[in-house]
Image 1 (cartoon, rainbow, N blue to C red):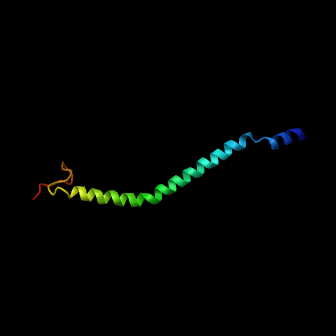
Image 2 (tube, rainbow, N blue to C red):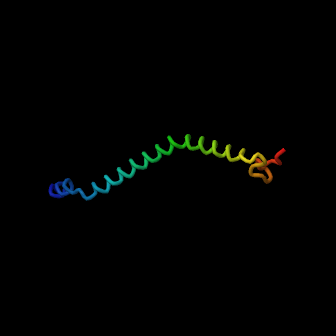
Image 3 (cartoon, rainbow, N blue to C red):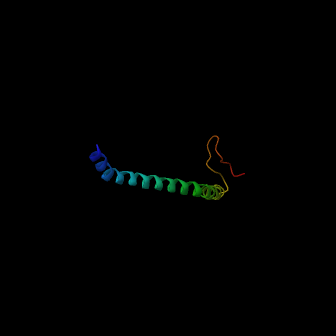
Length: 73
């Protein structure tokens, strides 16, 4: 039994897999945090661009039923 415990204590084959798992989890947390922080800023930029594009022609928008289009009047 003592021999088994000594071999188990010295065996590091699973340690590498656990380390890679921890690194992957840390990277996922960093990516999610970065996207969350940048998300609001990107939404504001896209809305600004959409407003500029929508008002550029002065005669419409996307049109169709229920759309934001107009007749230019």
